[in-house]
Amino acid sequence: MSSPRVRFAPAPTGFLHVGSARTALFNWLFARRHGGEMVLRVEDTDAALKTQEYVDAIIEPLRWLGLDWDSGPHFQSDRRDRHSEAVERLVDGGAAYYCDLTRSEIEERCAAAGYHGWSRDRDVADGPGVVVRFRCPDEGATVVNDLVRGEVSFPNESLEDFVIRRGDGSPTFHLANAVDDHDMGISHVIRGEDLLNTTPRVLLIWQALGYGAPPVYAHLPLLVNAKRQKLSKRRDDVSLDSYRRAGYLPEAMVNYLALLGWGPPDEVEIRPLHEIVTLFDLDAVKPAAAFFDPARLDHINSEYIKALTPEQFAERAEPFLTGADAPWAPERYDRDIVRSLAGEIQQRIAHLDEVAGWIDWILRPDVVYDEKAWHKSIVKGRAAAEVLEAVEARLADDDFSSAERLEAIVMGVGDELTESIGARVRSQPPVRVALTGTGAGLPLWEPMRLLGKDETLRRLQETRDRLG
RNA sequence: GCCCCGUUCGUCUAGCGGCCUAGGACGCCACCCUCUCAAGGUGGUAGCACGGGUUCAAAUCCCGUACGGGGUGCCA
Image (cartoon, rainbow, N blue to C red; front, top):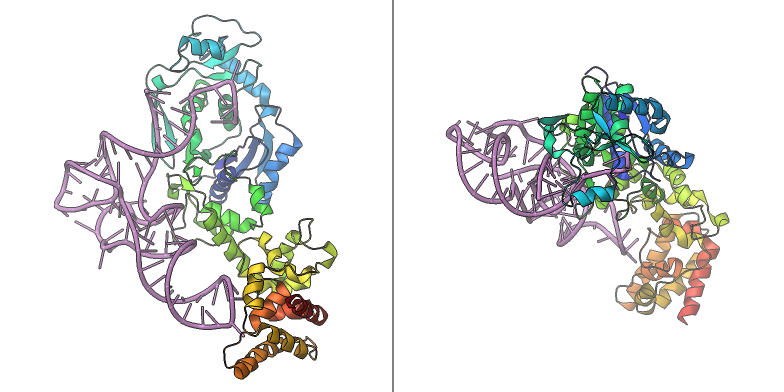
């Protein structure tokens, strides 16, 4: 393939949605795979949307994912003159005409189906509020050449004379699309399937403008929710940024996104982007809609988290542990604690916002007791009071320099009581509840060492007091 | 209503006429490991939407039906 040129053309709508990110990714993969170029074009025909804030909401998530582009961002709103020029040419050539009918007037004429070319021969004069409509052919068919779906044919009689310039003089996106894709030399248009039905409009404009061979299209399968509806901002959690804030790693997110509608030939699914680039191709894209499955994303993210070194893990978890949302006073945070426990935490979480929950008992000054665990291991636990007393006494002579020794001491107490009582005494559960407040958590010994001798003894004491 | 697309385990997918008694992964279940929770290991559960063709042979090709989705805006 002679180096293709693709474009990612999102509308600035506030934030980048996972579906758009997937589209951007597939464009990027295709361009990089074939040594082509990617253009970033902001589809702001609606003009008011061109603010720095909206543009950042597109660019920052793309950068976060590790995607880049060779040209742009370009703004459709900056190309207004080119669009107007094209509209004029179409009107002059008879391919488009003025129309002053309002929406309600159109509905009055025909409640069931759209517009029927009523103004074609009314010879309406241009003016404020007057739109320009494209004159669709009444016969024949318009064919979209699509790399994912083959040739898709639309009967022209099913197409209505659509608006290419609004009443305020601004171009609609079909018109702008044709002009911009032509001017920017776009060879492949890769986008969501929801746009497949509007492609004949762009093709018809393209043809009327005498642009020659149109780009090749590739309409990607839609991303859908559990009810198999197109992912939507209103009902689904689709902001890429919300996944970032929840502690999904960008490399995991981009890996997962690549797997929606495409699969590597060797079936090795979890792999870095630079490898995916060498394997990707559009003809392997599946046409059926794909469910954006949070459980699968979690699995992939957890694999990436497990692969981090302790140092990397501590560094990447830090933003989730030092902010205002952290469950402890900021000055109590200590990165060494996270680094020391990294391996154990890594195998227990699916995303970074879960880290705090495993270590908060070390960093918070007071223990929050889980009542069920308290009852089970302290109140009902066999010889729990004796365990706590003996452990406290022996720990008083230790210097807390070895996690292994702490384990030996606690377990030893359990073994000895088992012997003297004649029934199995588990010493870990009461100690765990006394120190952490809960019945489940990290292996106790290293965290206990990090908690320190004074605080450990204090909590054991406090538990015995509370037990009465 | 009209137009378009789609349909392999619950999910993501492999499969592009014989290698398929349909493979992998996630999820789920069981067992092993384990003085917590996990992780890990082993095994299991489960699918070609339906009906016609074409062919010696169809999950794979064609037609139809059903179901799902998308579009049908002076949104993109």
